[in-house]
Length: 129
Image (cartoon, rainbow, N blue to C red):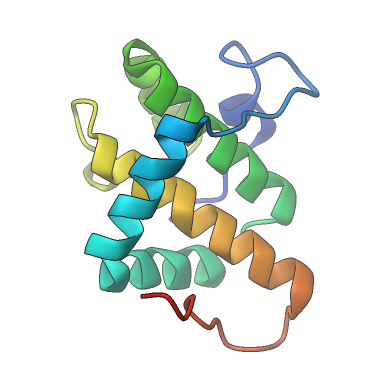
């Protein structure tokens, strides 16, 4: 997974300095994906951690994925920006995929929380899985 630059999470999809928040419907979708796909989420988190991505870029990744979940029509633009930023084409679905984006949102938040709390410790998945 390639490191993302500020363009992906901010312009033109999101005003600078504004963070996306998952609404109640999105929170339910994220929880559903987390419960159905814990191994996939764990794998994505491990790939994110191995990539050397910064906490700031993780937040941008989360914000962009939530924005796409809220507005699926923005996915082609996000995909194009990610490809320009060095993400491999085979790593991104050609069409909007809510499970993929929810997995990215969950994994980026778990990795970010882990980096902020215990940056040198192995990741522990939530106990409710």
